[in-house]
Length: 490
Image (cartoon, rainbow, N blue to C red):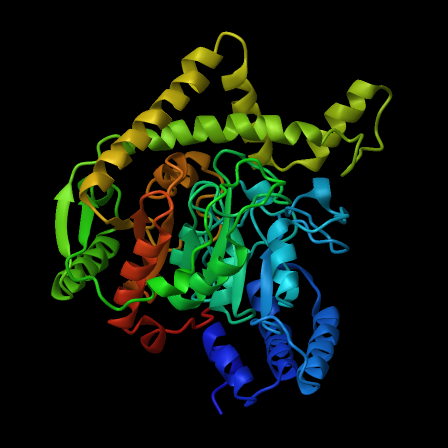
């Protein structure tokens, strides 16, 4: 029999329906894998293996009795550690929340529980989702299973690494400026950032509220569509969540792009892109031409301003959102103080890491009197221009095709001391968040060192069905998963 951990979620469901395997077999296979590989990969902050095994036994008993269960009952999952989970630590990989146990579940976690999906634990990330390499976690540095000396990307590095290393069959990540797509690209898996407002953010610890979005990280596009079906939908507890008619994204799994128009913005293929990344993207473009898509290069010149606007808006919102961590209400509190001011200052100085402090200071500066108009207001105006530019592009094209990242995964430690270089790693992804658009990253080959390369497909707002269709067609006509496997090189 094929190894359980090699199967996609839809293959596991098929085998469960045919009674070829049991829920307990699946959970045990993943727990064994965590025990075998977690020391190498360091993907989890908290594992819940014992509870998962117990839950799988209960679900299996219900199945044996013929009771009606959710379609995905018994499938394991990993959850990024910035989504609240009742009774389980939610740390955001920060000393500030090291011992915080949430009294409630995030909406997405509730939806997983309603389906009786089994959580294997909380996955590592850059502290408060600020970073592009998962090196800014207070607890550990997650490693990329393709080469353990390289980063898995960030901030959802634990989620992407866990899926690539087969510690979980799928995972939830969050994406503020590329934090699902970039690690998916670095780890050779599929990462989908939904349209802003499609998935509830209730219970997601906020970094930048107008940019954050929860989405799936999976082995293939079909699993992405399935997980999006589960987590998407209106939630009255999140006022930014759109009240739209529910869609079935698995209906977009059509192996056909004939007559579809794909726009290729030339600004994303210019200076700074690794030649091997560019070459693989060009091969993917040729593949789409073969499959009958219409490809056209065009100019999206506002894209170069998106990065600056993103960092101003994101840091401004972060400085506001992180004001709640004051050492008084919950979270870390210093024991060195003589006054209330000391409690605030010392709790925040000791509780936050350098990258979080950097962004709070930058955000407070751009919101301060005398600078608000020059920076924050200007960035919001640029955001409007970026949206308009994308609207114009989508009048002509069904989807846009770009690299997910200008490079492959870099070595641990090579950029963590250079914040500016780290910020530039988001150049291909941030404009999607600025525009509130959906984007998906699919693997499109490896470089000469065997490291994965990701292709990003961007759609218009609430056009997930188009990007899923275009990504699925590419995946069905190439053989990345069969051909390439993480090697755990040291």
